[in-house]
Image (cartoon, rainbow, N blue to C red; front, side, top):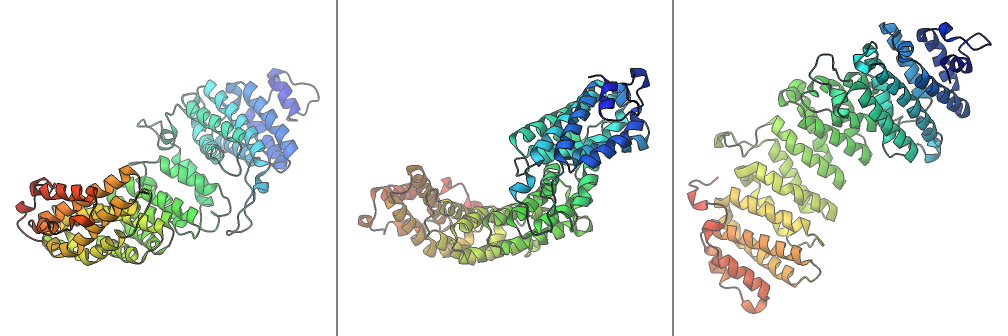
Length: 517
């Protein structure tokens, strides 16, 4: 269909006859009328569907010079951007009535078909824009007006959510590909952050202009998609592009982190962790922002949600290095190894580990313990009594089928022995019986897989060898007193290996250390 016929069909001409091509009005005159038609049809599904199809035909058949070249001033660009937003508004998601409830699947019933049609129309627009030269053509300035809303719309609908279908997700993915192609971008991260060339600016600022009003304290929970689009956008941005936008990215992340619903809270923690990893430490410490993030994460250690605690502990490990030097840092003199935030976190973790009875939480804490012990280094001596109680308690508890808790606690014990070896000789009498009991229990447990059983026995034997090294061979003398009639052949073989192992092969040269921590 030719352009005059399309304009006649859209009722954009006052003539009853088809306009000759020479009498086609400029696009700048038609934009307000197109917007008006889209706004009036937004809540009428059949009517808007027909109108979107007509617009798609207009974008497909119109000459790029007629469609884009007249858009030269900022006012014209803003007018064209309003047309894009009006078109996107035909597939807008319904809002929740308040900030506590969520919408049912029935509320989104009409959204996927409308989104599919809008994606198709916008894809046609971008293909025409590329045909006219794209960001290197005469309408290059139009790019930063139309790309951000199109990007936000595509991201909203290519994720598998209650407001999408397979067809709408496919359409949104094609739209995203067309967006990248029209601007000459390599991927979504490149699209947002831009390139090194001065005229190749990213659209992150424009995307945040759209998202920021929706991510305010009073409105972010009204639309279920906005938090996902924000999180997706943030995850694409890496250093050094993140720091200049930190003041716009950190507050929404803290809002998500503080929400009472676990899924929102975990999304917020992931956002905060990404910010910590991709922001310069000096920028994060500016205005005490790192301390704010630390307090927001630390309070999650009092919850009973295993997934939230796991994410929070992982983020805290990286954040603590922003706030202070590692206690095990070689350039930190012993006189300055005073209690710090690392101690606060480890102390709370150990306290919760002693009282925890839920298997999921035990696994989370046990997995984090070796990382914190390794970070503490010799400063773990401040927590030896609690570490010992935790190790003795967790080695008693079976955790089939992978035995994650026992294996991680054994790893933590080995790291503790290596870091605090002069203090461990006095604790060998308490630890050795528990390790021997673990060998006996594991060797007779037929429910364990062979690989898990062997790994447990190997790690237990490694712990006994380290205890022997730090006790200067006293453990081997105690092992000689073990009653062989009470042990299986597997246990005896394991103990024989320990007794024959030279202390120099333990992986830690204790004899070379001259001072106790």
